[in-house]
Amino acid sequence: MSPPPVQAVIFDLDGTLVQTRVASWEVFEKLNRRHDLGVDEPEKYFDLFRGNIYDSIAKLCRDEAHAALVREDFLHLLRAEYTPPLVPGVAEVVRRLASETTLAVMSSNAMQVLRRVLTTNDLAFCFAHVFGGDVTPDKRTAMRTFLADPGSGFGRRCAADYDETDARPVPGPAATVLVTDTAGDVRDGLEVGIRVVGVAWGMHSVEELTAAGAEFVALWPQEITAHLLGDAAATPATGACAAVSGDGRHGDPCHSRGTDAERARAAETRRARRRAAAPLTPVAAPRTPPDAPPAPAATPARAAAVDAELLDAVRRVVGR
Image 1 (cartoon, rainbow, N blue to C red):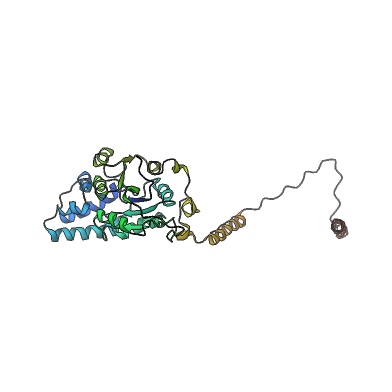
Image 2 (cartoon, rainbow, N blue to C red):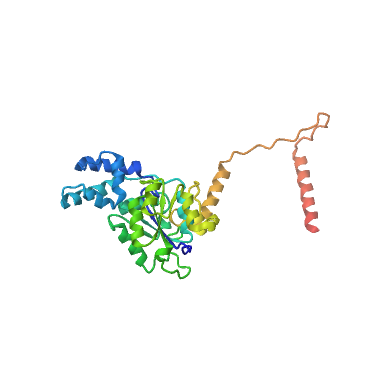
């Protein structure tokens, strides 16, 4: 029996929407040196994500007070220094899904980082819910909170306002999918009771994600859309989710481009500027045959005669 149509998708941030292996290790490596945590290479750091990252880090600390200090310092470093690049192709996937499902994003990262990453990449208004590690440290709590929200059926269609077009049912666990790059998240999602899809470009391998219980592991971002929407994936995004900004990047019209009328005026202004900046191309004079008689000299009398002929021709046309 096939699962019900997908109504909601919860994205992990780090390693799923953004490239994180290098960027997050650079931040953690400073934390490791400051607090002597004993994690001296990236692979040991990536292993910490097999469970909740804050629980894993706490096990490296001397006591609870030290764990609290390390967590606070880690969040401070993330807020100040962590700006990872978006995974190529993932913006289109987000916009396609946002046009007809409710999207949420959850992360162990700070809310400030989530805001910076999503606004920088013009994706902020694709997501109806955001759960940061400084507000909801446990991802299972974030997922349960989302499922329990009576308004979670109303998504954001790449615009600042929430969808109010019709009544939307609250997504049930079987119609909710977590997309993540870590085995720990896979297990958390399954414990909550929702479906889980893995991605191969993050912290953990295809084999690790499959062993943890992911129903599917995408090798490319576009496979997420194909797996979740089936044949409907070929239908393009609609409304604001289909908008493309003037520089070629997907952009949110309400966030960065104004209303339809404002965008139309801006487009006309750009066209006017292009026309004003375009060099005038001189019109070549018609070639005169070498044996043609010389043209009559441009005298005042000749100019007056030409004007009279033109005026007479206009009167005849109008009088018809």
